[in-house]
Image (cartoon, rainbow, N blue to C red; front, side, top):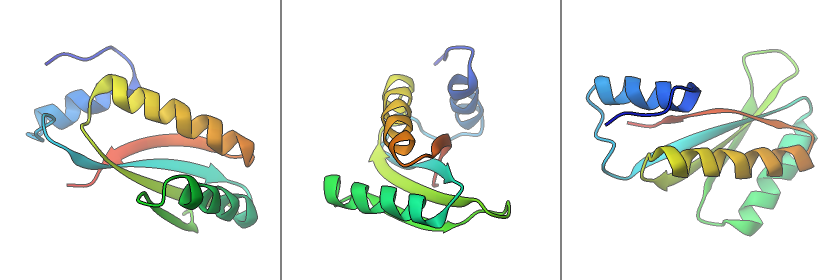
Length: 107
């Protein structure tokens, strides 16, 4: 399988080369970053109302004064699905003055 030449395509290529089966559903974690804990908790609360089955975790980042919201979606790690989900999280995070900071697969 070949992927577009961008960050998402590169990650998928690396996963495929590492032997991860991209034809099955995996827990895909999308990372959102915020400057304030209140902003992160507001997004988490919003997601818990809109998608109660989604796993959402708020925690301090390794970088001081930065908060993470990790959103886990069980999905097929398909290029189009991942880029669409990232765009959706980017729009939601922006409402709470945050931004999307990539994704990964829990194996």
